[in-house]
Length: 366
Image 1 (cartoon, one colour):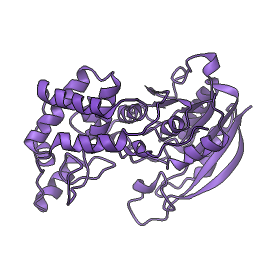
Image 2 (tube, rainbow, N blue to C red):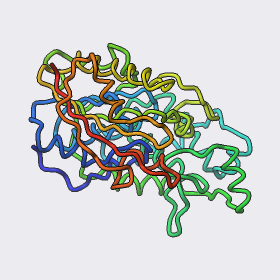
Image 3 (tube, rainbow, N blue to C red):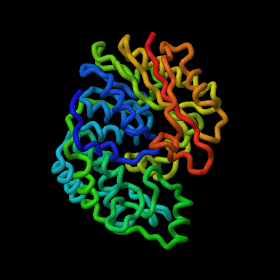
Image 4 (cartoon, rainbow, N blue to C red):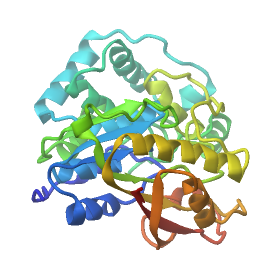
């Protein structure tokens, strides 16, 4: 396979709370994939599998029903030069009038007035057109800097004190900031962008990947470009049973790319969580759709686990999803617990409850 570049930091362009470590898909593809093969992730999230495929020179497709996930993944697949991104940022700040500026207690406490205006300039420009590689990269950079903690030496985020991986709920955040006397700082947008451009878009290899904003339960969402481009590898990690707040927890980033300026708790376009049986049935739909998009000798690797407040055996639930599907389970390997290294469930286990073991399921088309 292609020698890996020294700069793999682009994978961290935007912190995202459902992410397996880059070493997981990268290790599989480096050891086992052939240079002519293609890779699919039907639950691509922040695009870790797709970025791993880019690093080793493989074509890939990522599919996700979250607009935020699709935007982050797209930023990891474009090829663009750093000066172009900075020039685009300056042009937008100079020539774009901000529209639909949100207001209210949360917005007054979350962002300095001038910073919010700058963010709205970028938002307005991207909603008009975000089809070029330069704008896709710039949007990804701003999504990653939209909210996060204050730092002592320099500012890396646009917001008042916030988590990096998920957006705070407005009422709680407003009370928190006021009770501690925390006010949003006036930050230098171009300085934040320039620092991140240098970090993320230097020494990155050219890629050949695609991301689709689709629901993988829909039969045509995973169709490859041609019969010859059918996928040989599927490396993915679906939502864990009981994790239903993927979209609400990203409401600020969702707002930036065109969503509402308030939390939306609807669960449209998400895997069903009404019961373990319904959940497994929805996953089975995806596995069947994946099979139609794959080559006859395709291999699928699924990382799956659970959360501690659901009394469901994640291994058994995952095995159930493969029943009556075109896939034959070859092996199930213990991937450790969510607290042993950078596991997907890390950020969900906010209490001291016992972590749930995660598993890697290997399957082959039959």
